[in-house]
Length: 201
Image 1 (cartoon, rainbow, N blue to C red):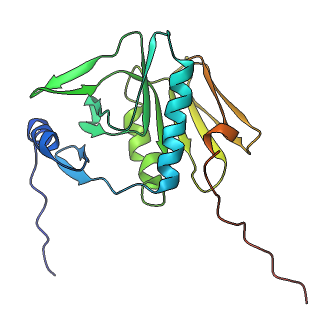
Image 2 (image 1 turned 90 degrees about the vertical axis):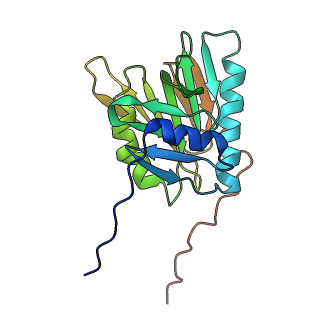
């Protein structure tokens, strides 16, 4: 049996120094740097339209939207993530380490799902994001069909799961005083054709 060497532990400071000089983004998982894969056109279209529609609704509000270039720090899990969209309210708070700022208090986080990221978005990231006391809403957006899941923190610290599906649906986001029409979010997305049933003999 061949023993594979374990990756060397990288400190947050070392990661952020590398990230500041890097041409592509990487996330940080408790000492391990994980390169981010490129996104599909559909992924980008959905993320951009979500950011645009939330930004329009949040003008002159105490909440501030951020794109996927804003890194989020999750201290409890020792993680740095780049969510597709995040929103902070009541004043954005940042960790400033080695001169690099990372958001500490997102109230809402949006991740657009893909085959390579969906499992992590639903498990490890979901578990870590929930440790942020500021987070009230976690949103998972499909890119292959009009379907959005929303997880909402309840007063007893449990999370309610709801699903909006179909282009006629409207997703309410009361934590930030916004709503998203799925017809708007998926307006520029061409979905793959639905599988056809085999003809009866």
